[in-house]
Amino acid sequence: MTSAVERIYDDVIRRNPSEPEFHQAVREVLDSLGAVLARHSEYADRKTVERICEPERQIIFRVPWQDDRGEVHINRGFRVEFNSALGPYKGGLRFHPSVNLGIVKFLGFEQVFKNALTGMPIGGGKGGSDFDPKGRSEAEVMRFCQSFMTELYRHLGEYTDVPAGDIGVGGREIGFLFGQYKRITNRYEAGVLTGKGLSYGGALVRTEATGYGAAFFAAEMLAVHGESLDGRTVSVSGAGNVAIYAVEKVQQLGGTVVTASDSGGYIVDEKGINLEVLKQVKEVERGRISDYADRVPSARYVAGGSVWDVPCDVAIPCASQNELPESAAVALVRNGCRIVVEGANMPTTPEAVTVLREGGVGFGPGKAANAGGVATSALEMQQNASRDRWSFEHTEARLHEIMRGIHARCHETAEEYGDPGNLVLGANVAGFLTVAEAVHAQGLV
Ligand code: NDP
Ligand code: 2IT
Image (tube, rainbow, N blue to C red):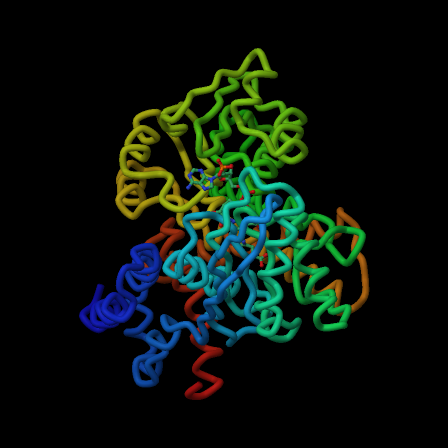
């Protein structure tokens, strides 16, 4: 870090105490910006970096709701509207007990650069709640979503702020949120949320998009070395939306996925994950990954432990932040892993990224590799705005083209900035340049 960038970082820490994930996300981007700022003195003059590190608006609100027994619960809701230089705030909602302001800010900050990399006209934001959907009935989830939207709706709009899903928020929750927004506003504003059901304005491929996109990105990374996913052994963590569709696309591209996990433990299935069983257990029954091992004789379940101990050529972390620590990176290097591709947001710790780089393992950062989800959300907004409906094939082809474009841009930018193959540098610089140019052009706002 140059001293100018170091000062900006120190200021971020001082003004945002007790938010380690936000500090981590900011540090990773600032670490990449020294050479950029040396070339662009106008960004220093107008404090463009400092403005990009400060959210435009941060909303925190009370979410009261009643469970099925009539007991009252009070959760906290968040929406951080980080940057609108490129378009309306865009980014998911996370429902998980670990959610706090610092986590929402790290996710919102990442989203700004990710959305810029897609080339679509979308700004960055993120939101959520410390509500824990686990073990809650559908009626409880609906009441929670309705209470959450009863406050959030005033901040949203298809030209203002467009949420989608993230951990704990999938098609069911988006449906409840959309219904309440429509009821309160008396407007059928389809483009106010993405990830909607196909019967009311949702887009084909949005469900699959993040996982498919991460697999496409992995394929692009391998292609640089004349390799492919065909015949590769792949480890995936998580067993939610991103993980399931990463497994599906890797399999379609000829790879064998041997793992999946949740917060309780992981499964190893050397024969390759049986996708039908995985979908039944996680999407239909909302069960645990251990249920998979109960049904598939070739699989074994490991309670706790580290899924990254399983030897693989390609690792795709798709669960949560900092799930791949230094010790896991050491194991991956030792076992001959070729590339790590982040399906989740910031799953790899900075220490682990260093170990991977020194060990010669290719690394695809989340803000590039998992951008397929939000890119397809932007395609959903496009379809809503034109009251159109695209086929699966057409939409998937657009997604594939967008992921190829993101990889190419990161790759070329890393070369231009003197560190070929460093996709962290490429993603941060390319994303920053797009946002900074628009922020600068719009004056001191
Ligand atoms: P889901 O809620 O569908 O699935 C999350 C999965 O990760 C579950 O298997 C869950 O296990 C596991 N998990 C969550 N938190 C932890 C934790 N602290 N430790 C271990 N395992 C955990 O979420 P998604 O698949 O949508 O999201 C996964 C990741 O991908 C997140 O980082 C998200 O931000 C990112 N992402 C999502 C996009 C999307 O379109 N959905 C787009 C881009 C990125 P358990 O059930 O035990 O909690
Ligand atoms: O982290 C992410 O990019 C998402 N959760 C998806 C955001 C979106 O608006 O589709």
